[in-house]
Image 1: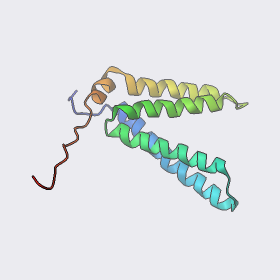
Image 2: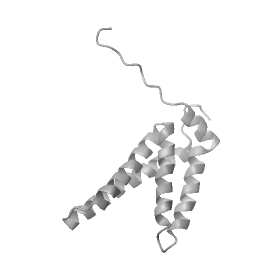
Image 3: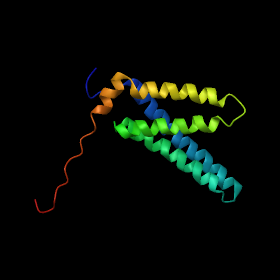
Image 4: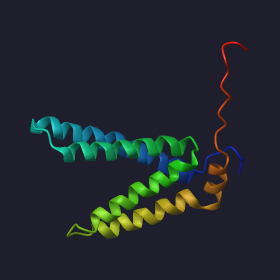
Length: 126
């Protein structure tokens, strides 16, 4: 594998998070606008969706911290699903395990080890 090439599993997870963030944000925004009432829970949900979006974008860009954010996001959902009466806990737990594997397997570790280089700032005087 080329050292700069993003593993397919990382690409899939990054795109999935970005998609979930965008679609979740749009869905809950529409729900909020339909209620015609302000509820703090809607703001909290929207922030959660934005976290998924940013995690996805920065996972795709190879930022190491973003994979930890992505895992924290899914672990948050695992914890929330523990309070649901259906099989949400099982489903979220399996998804969490798959995400952890995808973001922390040896190929992903190599990819995230190469933090994207940030050019040094240039001063206008130089």
